[in-house]
Length: 276
Image (cartoon, rainbow, N blue to C red; front, top):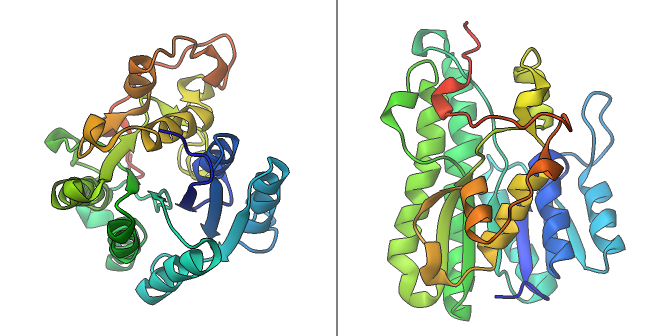
């Protein structure tokens, strides 16, 4: 299914995976809502919503940069309404914005727990809830959660993060089952390898970069998923490489961060805890 002139709302789109998704969607013909907190250049972090918007527009697509703190449910609802006011529709929602914290339960302050829950699972729920009535009315919608397949063996040393990310996956399944008859699909999508981003640069600074792929691999998988018929994958928790290979992609060398080294697969539980 074509993304031509579809409207795709992407959180965390000022940099990293979110920005890569925004540009990939624009190249596929979509107009993009660039939602994130960063509006002015940051001395330590690349990108702003306006920079991403300009790059989307340079590809010939319309862009709507929206400053958004995804922890604010009212702001999330207002952002969806601003999207519909601007474009007359919202066709897809990519819940990409995320907060990281990999530590044991006893080493996770409640303030950090609340942040992880607010940015990850609560924000994804609030944005999906706000977007769904418009998608139901249109009889069309795609929702993607950047979250992994649920795996019980991944919880140790990642308790708060695991709960928040697995929660996103479960919300996707709920939406898929509740709204299949409305032409709406919902999925979780997760990378097969570590992915380069500002967050991983900080939290995994000591990890061999040959183990990483560029954010483009996850972005290409996201666009491919947005183009699927609802019945194809809806409700499933997917891995980017598996999805791309099923579509006939065989060249993954272009996604390598270190050109002459192919990153091995990693599992959620392989992420080293911050307490290690």
